[in-house]
Every structure is written in structure tokens, then in C-alpha cells.
Amino acid sequence: MTSGRRPSEPLPHLPPTQAPFPAAAWPPRRRAFGLAVLGAVALTGCVIAPLPPAGPWRSDEGPVVDAPPPPPRYEAVPVAPGVAYVWIGGHWAWQAGRHVWIGGRWALPPAGHAWVPGYWGRHGPGWRWHGGYWRRR
Image 1 (spheres, helix red, strand yellow):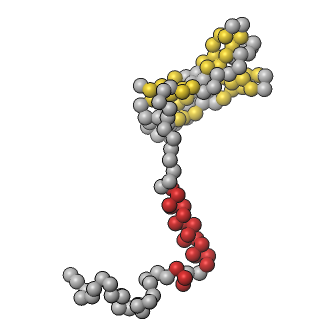
Image 2 (cartoon, one colour):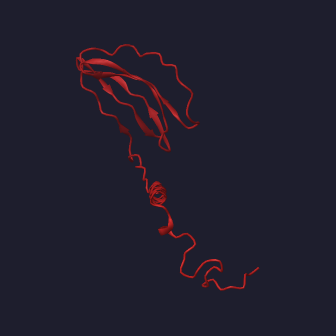
Image 3 (tube, helix red, strand yellow):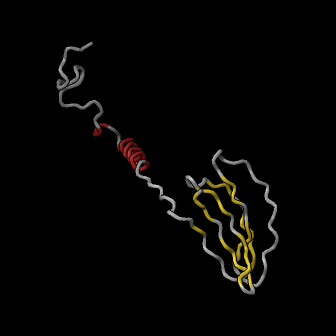
């Protein structure tokens, strides 16, 4: 089904010099909004997520402290935000010269990795936190 006109010919209801949607005819606010939306859409495709390191990575080890950590707190685990999420339980951290509880959280594991929880271990006469990390399966 053809209309009988060549693709290079202007549309019959528009003057030959007028584009179908002339940006100059838009009000300034609408033009600014359109450019902002266009920019946001363009930038969403530019987000690059960093890849996990090739080997296992650990959070920083804590300082050696004299006080042993208190027993772990009970945490009611909330409903997972998705099927693939992993629960990372809370732990005691050493901050400002005392133990502070850091609550657990759900995390989406890197592909092919499993969570190895952190732990408090003896270090000479004191205690040191060894942070959890994602281990390649």
C-alpha cells in the first residue's frame, strides 16, 4: 500500500520548510523538560557497574582490642527483597573504643559467589575482627 508520494517529498499538510515537531515552537519550559528527560534517558545507559575482584575480597580487618566481643544479638530476619538475595548477619564492630552492633542486611551476591561471614578471632593477647567476604564458588 503506497501513498503515491516519494519519501523525499514533504508531507502534504505541512509547508515544505516546517519539520513535524519543530523544537523552536516548544515553550521554553517544555523544551527544558524534554532535554532533561532526554539527558536522563541517555545517561541511564551509561552506568557501568564494577566487576567483583578476581579473587576473594575481605573487608578491612579491625584493630586488636583487649575486650572480647559480646555474644551475637538475635536478629529477626526480614523477608528477602528477592529470590537471589543472601542474608548477611549482623556483627559487633569496634568503634570509638567500644563494641557497637552493626545490624544484618540483605545483599545480592556477585554471580558465582557465596558469602563467608566475618568473625572475631584471638590475636595475641587481644581480639581482632576478620571481615566477611564473597568467595567464588
